[in-house]
Length: 230
Image (cartoon, rainbow, N blue to C red):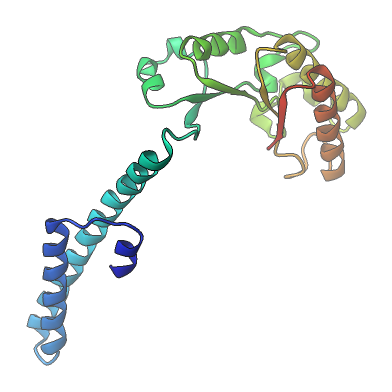
């Protein structure tokens, strides 16, 4: 308890009372070791009071620390958001989201953006970006390339085992996306989960080469954007 108060915790009378109950019950249990029923009852009471004290501490301390931080340095610059899955306008309850966050991750997969080989669809990104701009949220887009089955378009499996072809398709997607939204998106998560496991006949080195090439292409398409490898 002393450690908590040294870090700035302001205790309440409720917490003090609960801790007092826990201590008295603990002493009672320790002094009645030869009376099992009394010892058990006191031990249970001490444990219950200690658990309640822990709950009170964890509820009050973070709030007090945040208040002290805000009082000394003003509004925090921390970004708090969520991943958008689909068009937010069509999701029940999305109208309340902006009041609880200041950022959002526009979530689009290779499967979503290129359901057909050589053809791209941007309507999902457009809808999510429009919603974010309307609510003045900071935006991160991606990941564009993710090495997991559910994120890959069905047609890419026709090129299973051909790293050069897969690299070409992946980098074309990155180039098209970053170029289209240049000046509108400042932060891209370009690739996620490279070299996590073999997929599409691609080993770790193949996936790392594709990731490196995708980052290079994104940088060429928009040199001012921040790029992330997840």
